[in-house]
Length: 571
Image (tube, rainbow, N blue to C red; front, side, top):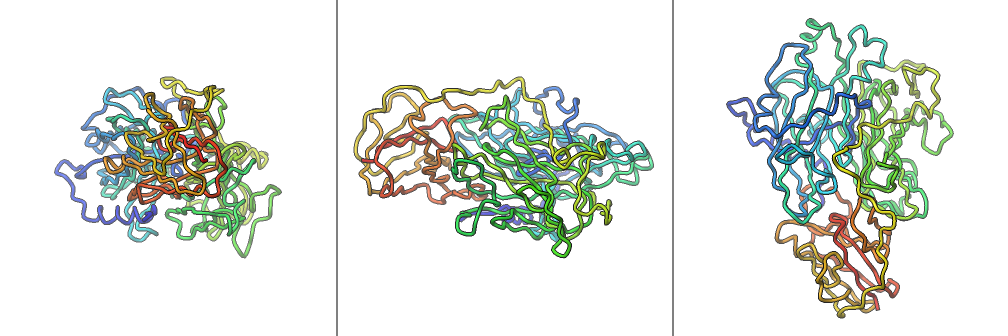
């Protein structure tokens, strides 16, 4: 049974409703959280300031108690939260729900997440992958019983609200942006760390949050700052991208017949639906101005596009591109070193002066653009996180418009352009390959069999990942069923997939290799209570019907552990 994000947060609400508070002021049972803003997640901030990346520090078990200690109103400082230590078992992609109660009043204005080892060094994304990590508020009056605060995903987006505030002429008069946190707020973290290696890893999640302490009234009295409280909104979908030989835009290029399995998430927006041939459409429940925004995607994406169709009674005019209404943001998938597709990327953030004016009832439309020329991308994502200033009402002249405050004459392309959110890490060199497949003859066929076991991170028979496999790739008669059994699931809830890649698919795993050739994908084999894969199977086994397959040699890898390889012959 697949669980949606909304189901997860309902469970979270039940857990938090009776959450006790320790004598120290900390919530009992502290646990994981990775924090940044954005889609499943994209930080939604302006470009990262130079001081965002702070010096390395070792995990401090008392960090959370220290972080919640109130300061003088108007004090602005970085607080550091550590969660863990957590032993992430080999191959694990287990989800966690961790409660927290805020012990202070203030505004969050900057965010920097990371996964670190005990000595404080940052873990490589090649080893630890953040599927997602979200911070939510418990709110029984909101759809799903929660309101999204912010989150991150594999690109570990980070940023600060200050550049967006400084772009407004009112900044010199004290106008500021922040996300309000109130003493007693019941918060919950939903996180999913994926250990991509075959060894146990002990890690901490480190969150650096820049806070301005105090209530609005206290800060205004002390500093003269007028904080505009931003309302976070997160909308997006999970879906499959087929290999098309060109560009694929979801859901714009989908039809009712070919849309396939997909998920749909929106918080706290009540109305959101995936409309084939249009996009994911959601109605804005307030008047206001979107001041910060960014997308989230997966490797293989080119961009996440946000457009505005206006209200049903007063629609926006088409601006001439293929996206509905007026295009207001194109959050680019920026790969490191211009290597594409790549697992090492970040999402473009809206420029500091970017503003989008919306009315209650405006239909914002989200589309994910993927380059499916050479590859397919199962379980892809397209999300957009945005922060709306609901105190800024939209005038008649501003309907269906976006602007750059610092460039009144900017074109629509210039307004929708997005910028990098962080510097590339120097301590983790990027591993790529140009000619990824190793030359050599095809392996000799092994035994005829109808069963392949996945055990110890090997496909048996037919394993190509390690030396010492005594048999060659198995042979199955065309028309018979080849069954794959994930034995690792019973030993530690480790899930695997059978995802074909172009033969010989024998090169070393790097950020740009391997990728799915679009032929066969089993989905993740094994049940997970919070499911993030639309192709996942509850059972730890999968049956492949070979009746419609061509004769020949097939190679495959594990989508969750890309260094695992296997092969078989259809005879």
